Image (cartoon, rainbow, N blue to C red; front, side, top):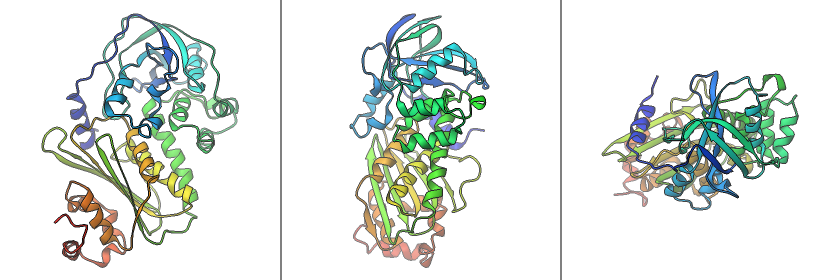
Length: 398
């Protein structure tokens, strides 16, 4: 079933006109390191490396954690991704001992970029650009593939050889060791973690949400034991045609993600939202992977500060926005949580301030929200009295 958000983002990406790198049937270059596992025809999937027609250090092409801190533009990121050529072979998800898959595992465990040689059945063509995943350039079935000697990352090597360690424990260990999320996810996707007999290939899209959810669940178990904050805190961040407002409220853990897409294709103003109460999320989120990646990024910060709070995240995407994958949410929210926060004594002044920063009238977000209507202090005043008070507030747009 296609949700309203999926339908809208498919329509948005269909309007994009991108140009990818051109290569022949033979490619000699460097993999960042990078791999991609598709989900089509699962449990038989197309798996393979992504290689750039460049030599040397190409890490930047597949290291989302570095793009926003290094102030890379949307155009920079698209150019990085369109220079990656995907080779692919059909394999069963259980074939983790396949010679080709073992090379993909070598790539995913690597500490550095790897020199690679590939021969394709046909000249790679097209590009991969959809509503959820990070894009990349042309692709083709790969017939021959070789890589140079690989130096493994020590932490990734440790979990690979620990065949009694559960996959969730491996993901958590790597997160604690500060291994970049993108490296954890790639290694997870090619079956390098978990109890040996249960290791499987996992499509890239699914592996991202699996790693986000695993880390978030473990962090939440920790955060539940921390003291609740005593005031309202607002963290903000803007990049890549997005604005994020992360509001921490003095309650037990609860979480809501609300995103608005404003005037990207025309005059549309679309809002999508999902939430969880203190007991946690039941079922898959109707807004997709961004829900889990935002939740993980916020819980990282709460655990780091040893605090507990309810969390309400508002995101606006503006004209010029391009869907680049859920990393966009994770890394923007991480950067938001690293900024100095603005503190408020009550929900009204918090929301009045947020209302002065966003472009969509705040009442439209409130209408879609569940948690804002349920916060005990919020219920002390009616919507009508809130808006009367807002007119007197120095942060008001009026």
